[in-house]
Length: 133
View 1 (tube, helix red, strand yellow):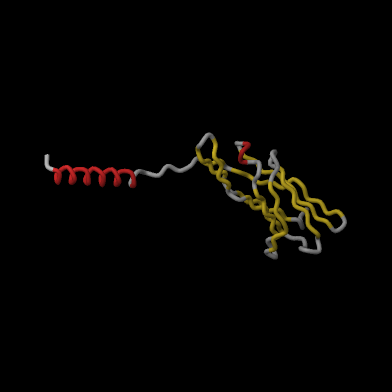
View 2 (cartoon, one colour; view 1 turned 135 degrees about the horizontal axis):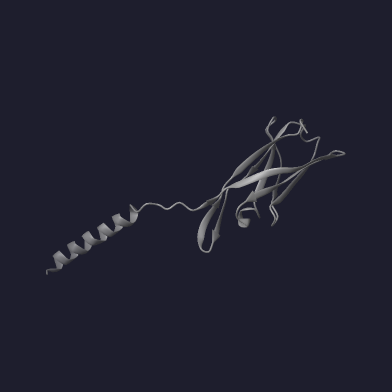
């Protein structure tokens, strides 16, 4: 076979391989549903304390999750916390910063590697009406 024919066959094989690899279907990372709860609401003198827990079927989706607490009536971010190894979170703030109303805890999505594979811990939100409590 001539050098030209070999070069052409090599180019066709390389192009075919490249097209096959780039058109392969993407496999989505497995995901774990997460839930954020409110377990604590206290007003002590001028300090307001909110607390709760992140729940998921996998423990690695409970620990180290960022929880953002907002007073949604006024659109004010009142604090953040990272969950401990049991998924517990707590945010304290001075009640002069923000008044009563409806609060929302937002849990950010988290991607972790488990045994070399990516797993997505899903985001979650939960509202709490401090005026009703």
